Length: 253
Ligand SMILES: *[C@@H]1O[C@H](CO)[C@@H](O)[C@H](O)[C@H]1NC(C)=O
Ligand SMILES: *[C@@H]1O[C@H](CO)[C@@H](O)[C@H](O)[C@H]1NC(C)=O
Ligand SMILES: *[C@@H]1O[C@H](CO)[C@@H](O)[C@H](O)[C@H]1NC(C)=O
Ligand SMILES: *[C@@H]1O[C@H](CO)[C@@H](O)[C@H](O)[C@H]1NC(C)=O
Image (cartoon, rainbow, N blue to C red; front, side):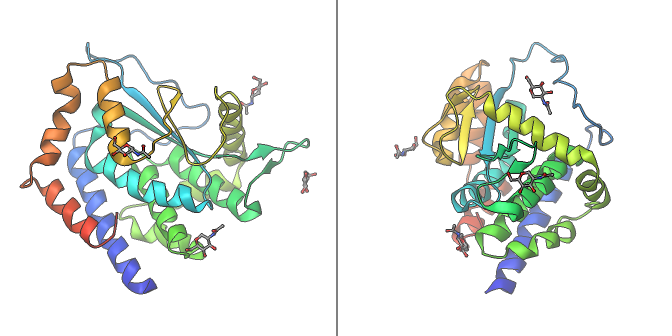
């Protein structure tokens, strides 16, 4: 069971990453930055501002895992990037104790994975961080928590050193404390995980269909521009649609 799951995951990741490579072939790869990440720079054209989609989750929470495993590939495969700014918050319902230590719902192990994911999101270019989170959460959803490290090898071209360096330095801790600040600033306050907000407003129906619809409506571009991807997705002959059908049938996503 576990090894066939792994085989499926490998295929999916290779597909996702190669797709990502293709779609970002001429984008500029920026070197990993150190804290603080600058705010999103000026928007180059007259293109409307991207919709902010924020996922707050706990790495060892099963509903968070199931959610992320379904949602991340959907969003990345549909290349919603043009009009959505997807932000993952591996902090969920953790809190900061009186002595400044982060305390997690499912204990030390969850704090550990939350921080590893925070580092991956922070140091890896493009959407590699999101793919890494997808991979780790896939392991968690299959009860293979201890195999999370395999994700360094499953993601082609991934360099583990920046992630490990981040984890072992105070950068990882600072990241978690920053997530803590963002989390405590949520209005209304987070009551459950996964907690999804669209332009800071909670989305209580977190089905992918609903998220996509909400994004499409929130985007201030022309409806054609925002919803074009839905048409592309509906096109049964597109490679993405074909892949998605196969992946769904096999239960990968
Ligand atoms: C901080 O407090 C937690 C419990 O609230 C405890 O487990 C931890 O060891 C403390 N850390 C330090 C550095 O004192
Ligand atoms: C989460 O799912 C895993 C794998 O299916 C299972 O082993 C674990 O007990 C579940 N945890 C909780 C808190 O339900
Ligand atoms: C969190 O917010 C408080 C008050 O707004 C600030 O003093 C603190 O430096 C922030 N911490 C981090 C890690 O950003
Ligand atoms: C969530 O939204 C989807 C799509 O908009 C809809 O089909 C589904 O019935 C909704 N679920 C709930 C529980 O409201």
